[in-house]
Length: 220
Image (cartoon, rainbow, N blue to C red; front, top):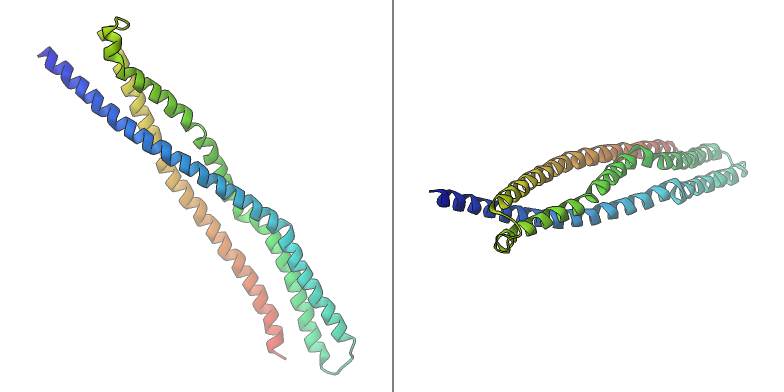
């Protein structure tokens, strides 16, 4: 009866180890891929931030300045009825200069939170390889238990303690993996939702200013 119980426990441990190894390998592949994805988004995000706070606003400022300069030229004609057009052109030029300010301020309003979330996960992802390596080493040692017993290096009670420790490690690691996935889904849903809400507001704000500038020309 004791032999049957022992055999049953061994089979249970073997099944647990097999499932644990499969899940760890799958999780390891996932975290490596996610790490690549997180790094890519961080690189693209930082590049876009620099563009929004540097070259892009300057382009809008140049467009606005060029339109206002054209307005000044037209205004010098002293032609009757010119004022409506020059005023509209001046307003359009100022609109593009205002858009430049909006663009420069936008990354802090939306991209900041998304990049912060990615940075946090980049740090978390960096911890898992070592944890998984330690777990794998413990599992590999446990697989050698029979050989170690035969060689007289450990006793049956040592193997039992080893089984318990590795089982505890496996359950703890599984709990951590589940916790990670659960938080990941929540955090990225929240981050992307906030980012897109701010993007909608951003483009709506620009569209409203352009419509206002356009309305000055439609009244001519």
